[in-house]
Every structure is written in structure tokens, then in C-alpha cells.
Amino acid sequence: MIVFDVQCESGHVFEGWFSSNDAFEGQRKAGVVACPVCGSAKVEKALMAPNVTPKKGLSPSEEKKAAEQAMKTLVKMRKAVEENCDYVGGEFAEEARKIHYGETESRNIYGEASGEEAEALTEEGIDFTQIPWVPNADN
Ligand SMILES: [Zn+2]
Image (cartoon, rainbow, N blue to C red):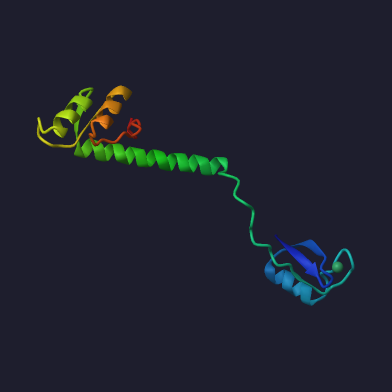
């Protein structure tokens, strides 16, 4: 069964249930689809109003999807970092500083830094990025 909004020549709109689009056309042509308001059999499918419902934020399922997408991106970032950078653990700030001042070989590193350490690095103009460290997808 399919349901249409049907409109008569006087502009009355009503719901019509039909087994198919062809069934509707057949019944319409046979004049058996009558308006319940005025009885007119001159009816046609009402034009569907375009969906103009304003977006009121994301639905819960959309939100879940967006969160999953963001998580996937972070997992990818983590992977890229792990594959391309040396892990220096808690020595991150120190190592970043050494690299910045040319005291050790220049390379990409990653590790942990406290908020204070990160702030100090920023003040010294040392280039680094903080990313949310997500658990590995395999874990
Ligand atoms: Zn009517």
C-alpha cells in the first residue's frame, strides 16, 4: 500500500491509500476517487511540499555518527603519529626544546607533556600540536 496526498479541484487535500501508483491512476481516471469534503472526483496527487524543516541540530543518531567519525579521524591521526614519529614519553617537552635549539637531531617526536610544559613550549615559539589521544581501535 502507498499513501498519497490527493487534492480535489477545490483545493481540498486528503489522504488516499492505494495498492500502487497505477491503481491510483486507474481509480482516478474511473472517477472513483472522490473528495470526502465536496465529493468531487476531479482529483490529482497533491504536490508534495519540499522538505523545508529547519535543521534543529543533529538527531541522536546523527550525533552518534558524527562522534564516530571524529573518533575515526583521531584514531587515524594517532596511527600516523605512531608510524612517523619517535615516542619520547614524558620527555616530550625536553626533547622538543632540544630539537628546536638544534641540540639533537631534528625529527618528529610525540609523547606526553603537562599543561605547563605545553604552555612553556608555546611561549618559546616551539612548534607542536596537541591532539586528543584516543585509545587504539584494536584495544
Ligand atoms: Zn473537495
